[in-house]
Image (cartoon, rainbow, N blue to C red; front, side):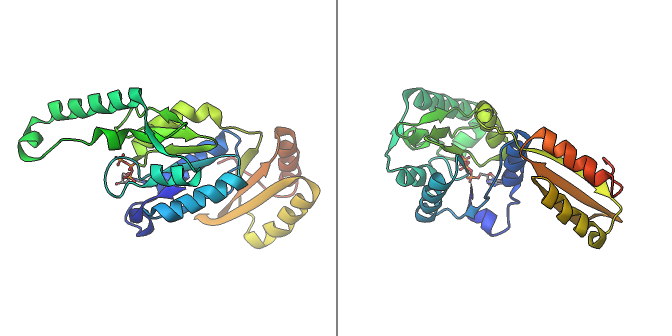
Length: 239
Ligand code: ATP
């Protein structure tokens, strides 16, 4: 789940959603749903609560920190019927990062009040596991099966790296390119799905005169057999 009014307005391209989807898929996990929600506590909590019941894991990015429109952490706490809490180590990190920022920007300090509400910036969901943010101020949090991560892309990557090992699965995929037109492809892909336990997708329009074909299977052996079957019937190239 990606959170932010600016995403819904199309002002910010949702690179976090595609980056995370690729990271998770590359690890063999199945991504079932991607949603974008505005900076509203009620709807964020509703989606988290629903997905928490339906899926193994829920990842939420964006809307962290201590500014007025940062409601994600509180919404996740609502969804799981928990409070917000401040971890002492997180508080110390946020305070130190804030002091470092002020020290590094004396020119800004002369013009603006750089005082930070350390308490508000340190809050995570009570009983959860704070995830330190090596690239920024707002900590993430893992609580039950919900992972809350910052929205700034560099911060999302840095925090996800710390928990990446907790995501995985056996799902395997392969991508190939073919000069077979969509119409000619269709019957082969249908027969492939009927013969093997695979999902097959074709994606026209990305490359001149070529279609991208993607196969997904629950394990490597099935994937290889299905790919060999298809390669016997249409020309497939790796790039
Ligand atoms: P901070 O802790 O700094 O307040 P945050 O976790 O609250 O960050 P947001 O305030 O939601 O994150 O977004 C910060 C910036 O990150 C936005 O200005 C936007 O440029 C970028 N951003 C947020 N969400 C996404 C996204 N899904 N894809 C790409 N960029 C994003």
